[in-house]
Image (cartoon, rainbow, N blue to C red; front, side, top):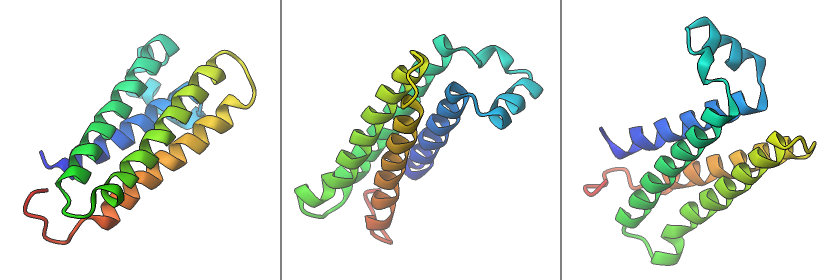
Length: 131
């Protein structure tokens, strides 16, 4: 499987698990309709969210290491995505604890996480032999 596909899978998985933890009705209804209603528990979703975040960050780190740009510029998308991941995980824990601004933190963190991935995708050379 190509690295880009793995990064996309990690990003989509993190977004879906965050949506479940935040209680988005459309996602919860879809999971229940296809018989995966047992997944809608914070004890399962939070570790699953962290696994997807970890997969995506690992693939993002590998991707930026393979690019032939200066080291500081190359790691910038990874740093942005890492900061976003940390904010979203913190927001998820705060949200589960019942604090009102936790949901906003999750959305801000996921936006930064997504921005880091888009930045990496845009900075990737057209015909990268190492990627």
